[in-house]
Amino acid sequence: MSIFKEKGRLDYGVNFWASEEGIRMWRNWNEESVRKDIEALKSVGISILRVFPDWSFFQPIDEIKGWQGGHRGYTNDDGTTLLFDNNENSGLNEVAFERFGKFLEICEENDVKVIPSILTGWMSGRLFVPHAIKGDLITDSSAIKQEVRFIRAFVKRFKDSKVIVAWCLGNECNCLGKAQKADDAWLWTAMLSDAIHSLDDRPVISGMHSLKIPGEGVWTIEDQAENTDILTTHPYGSPTYSSDIDPINTFRPLLHPAAQTLLYRGIGGKPCIIEETGTFGELYADEEATKDYIRCCLYSAFAYDCRGYFWWIAFDQSHLTYYPFYTNNRASNYGVLKADRSEKDRLSEFKDFGAFIKKFGNTLPERIVDGVCIIARGQASWPVAYNSFLLSRQAGLDIEFCFANEELPDSRLYIIPSLNDAESIRADALAKIMNKVENGAVLYISTGNGLIRNLGKYFGVKIHTRTRINGTKTVDFGDGDKFNVGAIAEYKLIPNGADVLARDENGDPIYVSSSYGKGKVFWLPAQLESWLFDKSGAYHKENAAPYYRVYREFAQFVPTDKCAHIDSLKIGMTEHVLEDGKRLLICINYSPEKQSAKITLSKGFNTLSVYHGKGTLKECEITIEPNHPLILEVTK
Image 1: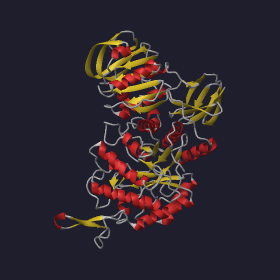
Image 2: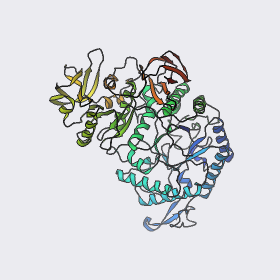
Image 3: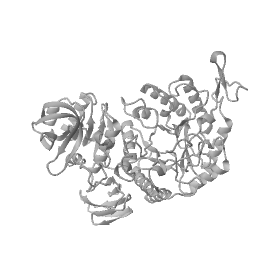
Image 4: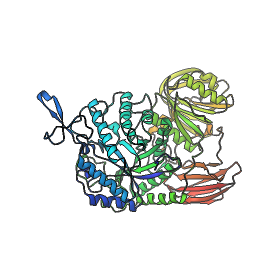
């Protein structure tokens, strides 16, 4: 089973800890209880599990110290024996390995697939590390030696299992220690990944938490992509991603998992899955809102080719009383099943989606993409990427992502959002982009503190003066669409061939466009995308400012192969070309209210019909129930 490698296929499942013991399931092994857990999950349609060997229990080595604390060796029985230091099996807990083997047998009996997160030394806010392993777990050579030994031993022991479909390095291993530089993180990942690849050809999954772009942090998307086969996102409605500033069942939070997964995939050039996601239990959303969240996110993951979607977690954990659970107020009832294995209402969404996938049968062709968003150095990559994705969605554009200063994909549209440094994008890279514009592409740039060489030549304006302000500027289109946006600098612009699309509070040009060769360029000297990151209600409230207008201005000039356009800010629509000449439109209502919209067809297509979903179609007018999909077929 080549999991996550096939385009257009979405596999879904859950992260698994046993219902009764949770993290202590391997220590307090109860085969009968675990068997009932697996049977319960299989009976409700869950057939892929991400599971976690507790590293501290599977490799319980301790250090023997001598005079003045000097190292004398390792033991796993309080010094009764001294472990051989040249044997990778030395110090392993055979009982733990036998229990994991039995677990795999139970899964095989129930036709449940397994992804082991091998080095589980971090879980739910606590380290689970063997006593002997000291120092930084990412950079200390003694620690890395034991980590590699454990990885090798685990893969050798279980690589013949038919139910293991991939290996995950561990659980958010970038939380294990503080790598001081990106090279440390690169080297650690390469060593552990190579240890697996040397023994087995199943894909290696990154399993990391919150990666960065080069220059932004030590754990980068590109380094993980170089050393693993599958990238991962762990999107929750949380302050980390600013997806908790709007209700969980509205536009911004609902598109978070897909947006982040596309960002990692685009920057890394490798498939990326939603490996962990959830709502933080009853503290963030009730059962109805959670169902809305799951439904929208599942269909979005399908539409955007996210390959995998795994809920956190299988069973509620609020009954657990040991650390970290007895101090952690956040760790509540996240499960798809209750601790007693009874079903929760949210499970119906996985069942319904599974029935749809079975009905659909085939893999989904890739959606038609209009352009690429270029993420540059010197800026907060997630805020600008996230909001560029959301604004594009409201403007009817479908985008992918890439990293600046590297080989650029051919595209009809390039978006460079909230450029924030003089060297964020190199002059030679910008020249290549302008060459593509000269040959017919559209370019949009918004700038914070970013500087652009040859700006007057490219954008048809002369900069009379530039003043640092670190405040806000008004963007007034003169037709009623008007709003404030963050700006680091105030420009006095003199048009020199450019069209003025909007003016600021002083009446000076603030959004301009110009022809450049066969293409067009658009420049907004304000940091629209990064500024929107913490602006609650910017996308879902009825009285929200029309920030999307900036993107709609250039969207109308982007050539497209799409046959359909929808006039809605809250219904997202992706278009997919089927083999028989038909098109599939996946429309998702990212709102907790019923939404109606008109679909305009072109390119000879004139017939719409409902394939799946909860809504109505009357000629080209659709109405979609709250937080539901409506999938349409288009024919000529």
